[in-house]
Image 1 (spheres, rainbow, N blue to C red):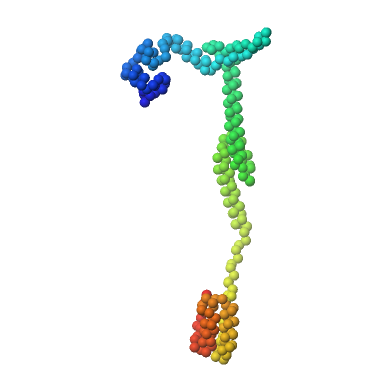
Image 2: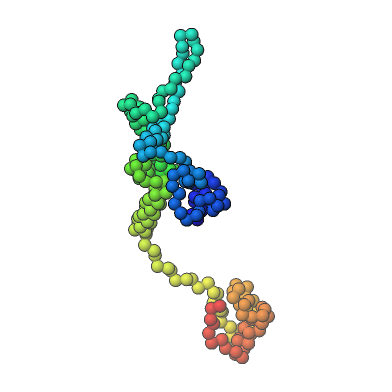
Length: 238
């Protein structure tokens, strides 16, 4: 890892580092320059002056200003001299530039935040959205959570009001027994009369169709009942 870091930061190959630099000893003076570990030699004062000059170039890069000569020709003149101390005008210009750039970036970020909050608008929660838009901190995701929470509370309150105002349920009326009553048959009746009674009951009561194999079977039962050969003790509803 160390060899790779040295190679990357000195702009050479790892093989170069291993062959010329990674000897495990200290390189001083011209020897350090020769192997590529340093860029050059300077006194302490020269190094400080170079650092100041580099910083000046970074803060105030050389700018060219175009001007017209009396003959109409365009001439470029340096607006700032590298290494010169910044003037009050330069400092104020930089401060104003930083302020304007920061203000623009902040305005764009706030505009995007407000638009994200507005996108969460839901009918009935306009006042909440208006409050969140201008609090300066709520994001679109946070606004969505708050709006959904308010909507749940609203629906819960509506449900409670509806339940409170709803009429009380009436008790169920007893179910009407639609099963046709069986007619009485006895020995005084003829076969034709019993048959007529049985067929009439068969036609009116569909439940008999599930209890007997057919109309003839039911007619036979009623005839046997009229003759006293069978007796129906009770009839359970199907």
